[in-house]
Every structure is written in C-alpha cells, then in structure tokens.
Image 1 (cartoon, rainbow, N blue to C red):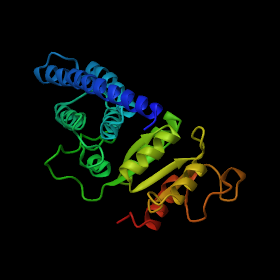
Image 2 (image 1 turned 180 degrees about the horizontal axis):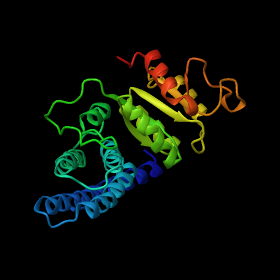
Image 3 (image 1 turned 90 degrees about the vertical axis):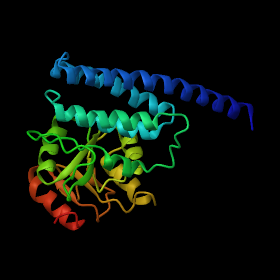
Image 4 (image 1 turned 60 degrees about the vertical axis):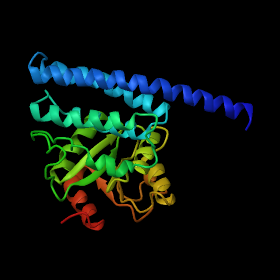
Length: 266
C-alpha cells in the first residue's frame, strides 16, 4: 500500500474516532432537550429550533467520516422537524426513536454496509403532513399505502407547495436540495418515486434522470420531472421519453397519471 493510501486510511480512522465522540455529544444534547420537554421545563417552540443544530451538525460530520446510516437518519430527522411549529408529546417519542437509531449506528463496530439504509429509512417515524398529527411511533400500525418519495428541488417555497399536494396523494416526501446529495440518497434509500426539479444546481433534473436510468442500482426506480415546460422544450432535451412530466400548472392530474403509470396508485 502506498504512503498516500496509508495517510488517507490513517486520516479516515482519526475522523471516524473523532466522529464517535461528536455523535455522542450531539445525541446527548438532543436527548437532554427531549427530557426537558417531557418535564415541562423547555419551551416546545424553542426546543424545535435547538434540536435542528445538533441534527444538522451530525448529518454533515457523519458524511465526512463515512457513517452513511447516521447521515440518512439525521437527514430524515431534519425533514421530520422541518414543518413543525412546536414539538408535541407524540413528536418527542418519535424523535427519541431517531436518536436511539442514530446512537446504534454511530458506533465504530457498526458495519455500515450490513444494514439496509432503505429498510432503515422506512422504519423511522414518518414526517407529519401539514395539519396532521405525528405518524405512529415504532411498534404501532402504520398506513399500508405510504409511498416513499424523494423530491430533488432547490427552491424552498416551491418545494413546500409541491409537498403539500404530494402529501395529499399519499406520498411521504423527503426533500433534498443538492444534486450530488440526491444521487447518494437515492442509491442508499431506494425510494418508490423520485421527483426531480428541472433546475437543481450543477446537474439539472434531466441530468439526474439520465444518470438514474443508466445506473443498474437505480434504473428500476420510478422517476418523474417537475417542470413548467411541455415535452419537446429545449430545456428538456435528452430526457428519456419514458419519464413522465409533472407540470406545475397540471400538478394534480399529472401526478395522478404518474402514480398510475408506475402502478403506485391504488
């Protein structure tokens, strides 16, 4: 093994060792907040904001230290918290499940490849839709027709508008705002449907759609494109004909047709 390879392995070992301690600190911080919420000494609205910081920090550091399972868990936790106005008792118990799972997966002896990230993501409590209570915690019956969808969109406001309609159609939506993060999340979590915005960042929605269609690990995953354009527009050049469009001005009808095409509708 070359000196360069040895140096990289040593650096990674150092990062992984440091990550374990950092993960413990961040998870303890969240757990203390949950305990304070249970005892009534923490403001539910302020606690929601306080939980976001360690969750976001842990998501970033787990990616660098190559703990992908923790990355998935923290991304889903951020997504779970995002629409909340305050944390209710039911949310507390669901967030506790995220903490417990992250703690299990943040140990050095946890084989990051032996656990299916897709199964792990689906086992976590579902993100509540606007106006809904939290989904049942682990161990309780969950809805049978939940469709795991991953939406790749840069604009937050547009994403919220789309998400409301997607939730109405029975989709559990995870939102990603970076094309490269999206590719990793799609490969790891194997969603039932991927919805791509036309414009993302370095890669466009068309670029990502073509990449997913070409890769053996993802070519079986249903994909659609969120767009304002009709098929044949220059911005959609290169998009495979089999990939349906969900046009912004025909969102409800196009989404219903897409779910039917992919046999995701009842």
